[in-house]
Amino acid sequence: MEDGQGRFAASVLPHLDAAYNLARWLVRDAHDAQDVVQDALVRALRHFDGFRGGDPRPWLLAIVRNAAFAWLGSRRSGEVDFADHEHELDAVLALDWRSCPTATSRASPTCRSAP
Image (cartoon, rainbow, N blue to C red; front, side, top):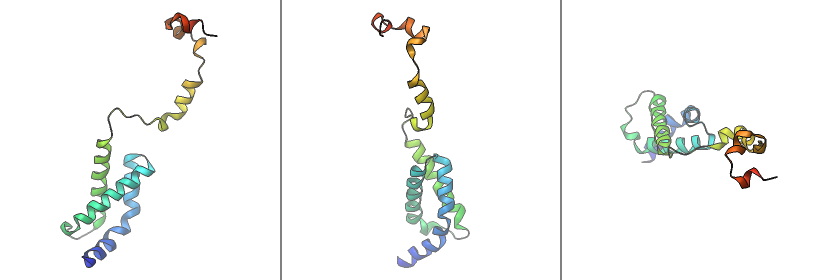
């Protein structure tokens, strides 16, 4: 087993930067990209005996791509990441809704009389 791990390290680990860059581009988050790469490396190590030789870079990047797609698919479809929209959220929260006639006309009488 030690020889297999040595071959894995020599073949795959030089491509870690490319794996991270791909994961970062696909999932758009640095921490999530680290998780995706870790999952991909575990998958690659588990299935390294099926690697047929040649250039390991495209083989590893295909595993990273599949791991990223699996991660993206596992996210709840209704989940919203407000960090991407923080400036918009701040602008909405800063609005003085009382100065907006449409908002106050639809508000309950209690809200319309608020100071």
